[in-house]
Amino acid sequence: MNEILKYFPDLSEEQRRQFAALFDLYADWNAKINVISRKDIDNLYEHHVLHSLAIAKLIRFKPGTDVLDFGTGGGFPGIPLAVMFPEVNFKLIDGTGKKIMVATEVAKAIGLKNVAAEHLRGEDERGHYDFIVSRAVMQLPDMFKLMRKNISRRQRNALPNGIITLKGGSLTEEVKPYKNIVNLLPLSEWFKEEWFVGKNIIYLPC
Image (tube, rainbow, N blue to C red; front, side, top):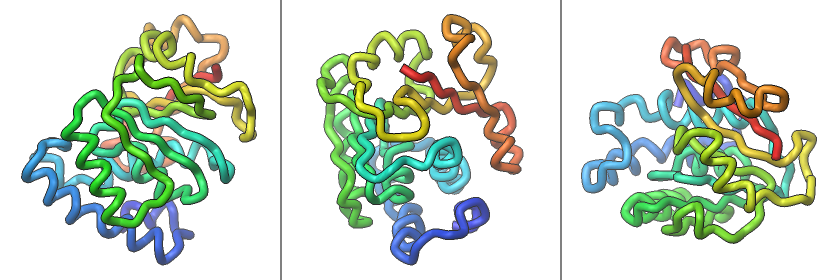
């Protein structure tokens, strides 16, 4: 929890309780269904929760915003963001049913009322959302082609609707088709832990 409070000190008591509960829940589920590398479970808060919350450094979603977490796995970045923004609506989808079951049960266990999780592939999603978020699900051009149909035309936030994805490594070629409009920001600008060096957030307005 210290990693979270270091960068987000103004959490409510309810948010602190929800974040604090995540370790035991994920450790328990991970022993049954591998949603996080078993070697990495001890780094849950830094590598998964705080990583997800980088999106909260880029944008403070307004209440009523609709966000789709595409390829959520066991609930990242959607569940940490849903804790951070309790008045924002999150839908979590993934093509693997077992992972969606974990995300559903974790959200239920910590009392999240603003999360719906569904076993669904991106091409089958028909809803419209202000933002689509993900963690390294696929190459940006492929994701843009697949998910742009789901971007709402109604604007609610200071940041125009679009795709926000968390990625590492060299991204020069991946963002090249959108070089005039894409925003590529290093997470080390916000988070000082060594693990975040080389990790980035990509924002593509749609």
